[in-house]
Every structure is written in structure tokens, then in C-alpha cells.
Amino acid sequence: MILTFFDLLVGFKSLPKLKKLEILNLGYNQFNKTNIKQLSGFTSLKTLAISNSNIEGFFPFEDFASLSNLEILDLSYNSFNGIVSSSIRLKSSLKSLSLVGNRLNGSLQYQGFCQLNKLQELDLSYNLFQGILPPCLNNFTSLRLLDLSSNLFSGNLSSPLLPNLTSLEYINLSYNQFEGSFSFSSFANHSKLQVVILGSDNNKFEVETEYPVGWLKGLTLSSCKLTGDLPGFLQYQFRLVGVDLSHNNLTGGFPNWLLENNMRLEVLVLRNNSLMGQLLPLGPNTCISSLDISHNQLDGQLQENVGHMIPNMKYLNLSNNGFEGILPSSIAEMGSLGALDLSANNFSGEVPKQLLATKDLGILKLSNNKFHGEIFSGDFNLTWLDFLYLDNNQFTGTLSNVISRSSRLWVLDVSNNYMSGEIPSQIGNMTYLITLVLGNNSFKGKLPPEISQLQRFVH
Image (tube, rainbow, N blue to C red; front, side, top):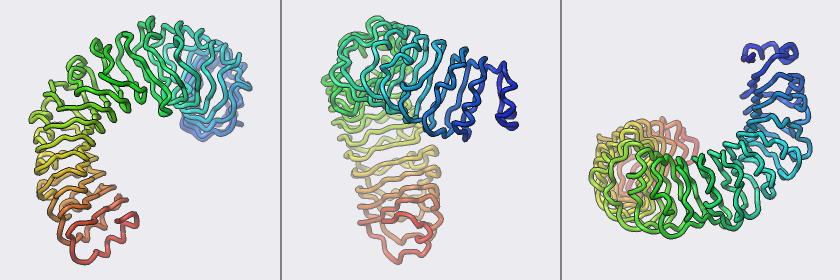
């Protein structure tokens, strides 16, 4: 029996009549602890979900001791707090537990947690749990998903990690306070593993990747002190969908082979490394939709047919490199492009007219280059644009077209250019605008009184 939203209209008083209820989803409501306590009598419940309901305080786990058939419990994205270990009374029959996005804390070193060894999915991410990982976690041999990310777990992961968890398909331990080194040899017997997410922001965690690993679909090793060339085992991966190796000290050239070997690759993030040299001619990859190679030392010109090689790009970030030359007009062939960041390079010439009519573009950052020409000519027609950064270039022209054709703008920065003319009175119609930066140009005339309608931040 499944409870629908209509059943909630009669209130909790009628719920005790539903003794055979097996699935109860009360998510996205405004409940409190008093309401929730009334659920303890539903002994037939197998699935209970109360996510996104703004429940505050310490959740009374002891009230669920009678739910002997409970298999799935989702309490994610509420405001629970306190130390779970002091009163958790969940049945060992539980297969899926999600406490994501609360303020729960304390250690997992207690018997109540260790009894949940039939779990197949455990997600405790985005809380305040702390301490070392309990040894009993290695007894959770049915685990397929383990997400402990964004907590305060600590300790050294240098010893083999959870060697008995050979059913694991997804593991995420990122953004905790682990120290020491971790070797991929820990995954030697994890043949089902598909997604590995490791990373830290405390600069004390290092990952050794020399040991080969099975067929991955997703890999994140952000801020893991990787140095030298990209991990060698990636040469033998052919099913990757997403790769994030950002914030390391990787060297060498752009790994075009990674795109060629993985024709399903959709996301590649190599941000903030030490990659050098030119972008090799990109081979065709119709799946890649997000590419971030910003904050490296790449240089040279973009190939003329770059838009044809990676046509389905939605997010492209080449900022803070040494790219130069004219921007190829084929970049406009990326028909789904929603965000383009070319800032802090040495690009020059005029911006291709085709790009200025890309319908889906919401973010365009061209700051700190050598672009010139009349940017807001009659070809400018970015009607869905939200953020436009053109500062520190050599653009000319007036603001008329951007004001009339980009009324959705939140941010407009044209400072440090050669813009001229008067500021149009229609600027008062830009009701979404929160930042307007016009400094160091050649604008003239009086400020239109309509600018006061913005009532936000104008520089």
C-alpha cells in the first residue's frame, strides 16, 4: 500500500488505521518531531522517506525500533543535529540509509552503527561526522554505494581500504580531513567499481595511482597531490564518462588521447595544474559537453574546426592560459553552449559574429584579452545572456544593442575598453541587473535618471 499526497489531507490522526502501509514518502513538506513520532506504529513499513522537510533538532531514532521491516530510510536535507551514536536504534534489516545534508555529528565507532551490516547504500555526506572510519565498516560486504564526503572524518588511509567491500560500485570519501597516502592497490579486488571520488582541501592527502584499477565510468582525484604525467592507468580506460583531476601539479601536454580513447566522455576537468604546450588537433568527440582546462600553461591557437570536433559542448573554460590568435568562428557551431570562459589569455581580433548570436549562451567571459572591434553591433543577439564580462580589452561602440537585446543580464562589465556614446535610458528596464561596471571608457553625457531604477550595485 502506498500513501499519496491526498491521504495527507486528512492529517496524521488517520494514519494509525493504515497498518499495512509499506511505502511512505513525506518529502518536501514542513513537519516537526511531534508529527514524526506518530510513525513508530507502522510496523509494515519497508520504505520511509522524509527528505527536504525542514525538520530541526535531534531526530528520535529510538522511536523507530518497532519498524522491524524497514529497508529504506531517507532523512536527507533536513536540519537534524546532535550525535547519532547516542540513541540510534535502527534494525539490521536496513538496506539503504541516507542522512545527506544535515548537521549530524559524532563518531561512527559504536555498536548500533556496526549492526547495520546488511546495508547496500550508505550516504552520510554533507554532515559533521568525525573520527576515524570504524573497522566494522569492512563487514558491510553488501555495500554498493558508500558516500562519506564533506564531513570531518580523519585518520590515515595508507592501509588497505575496506578490502572486503568487493561489491562496491560507487565510493566517495572526498572533502574530509584524511591524512597520509592512499594507494589504488586497495581496489585490487573491486571488480565492480565504477565511480571513485577522492579529494581534499587540507593539502595533507595524497593518492598513489600506479596500481591499475578496473573499468571506471567516473574518476575524481581533485587536490590529491598528483604530479608528473596523468595517471598511467588512464591509458587503458575506455568507458569513462567523467574525469576530474583538478588542483594538482600534473605536467605534460593536453591529453587528447583521453578524449579519443573514451568516446562516451562527457566531463573533463583539468583545472589548476601545470599542463603546457599547444592543444593538439582535437579528434571528434560528440559526447564531451563540459571541458575545463583553466589555470594551466597551455598556449598556441585554437584549431579552426574546434567547434566541429566537439559540437555538443555546454561548458567550455579555457581561462588563465596563454592561448592566442583569432577566435575561430566554428566555436559558434557548439549549438548547446551555455557558458564560455576565455578570460586571461592573449586572444585578439574581433569576436566572431556567429558567436554573438548563439541562442543558449548564458555566461560569456572574454576579460583580459586583446579583443577589439564593435562588440555590440547589429549582430549582437544574446537574448538569454545572464553574465557578460568584457573588461580589459579594446572593444569599441555603444551600449545600445546590449541594453535592448539582453534584458536578462545580471552582470555587465565593460570596464577598461574604448566604449563611447551615452548610456541609454533603457538601462532602467534591466530589472535583473545586480552589477554594472562601466569604468575607464569614453562614455559621455549625463547619467540617465532611469539608472536609479536598478537600485542595486552600479560602479
